[in-house]
Image (tube, rainbow, N blue to C red; front, side):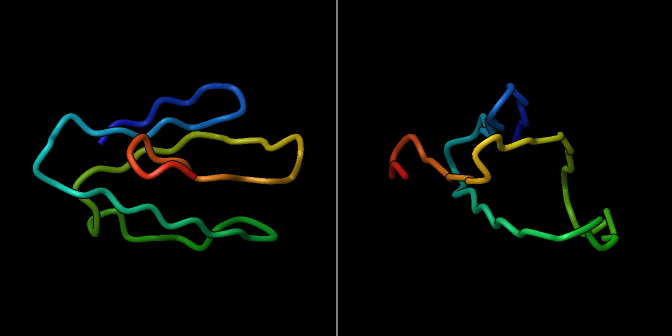
Length: 64
């Protein structure tokens, strides 16, 4: 999986065709709780700011 931050959005994509990616979105009022990075094969972070206060998750195949 790859993370490409662009102003106003985050593009997440993979180079493989033999897997199904899943996305989980969580909202916190403050700093997120710490996680053990050994739980993940890959990890990436990027900042995101929503000027409208809304967030949408899109898929090229499934849409919104």
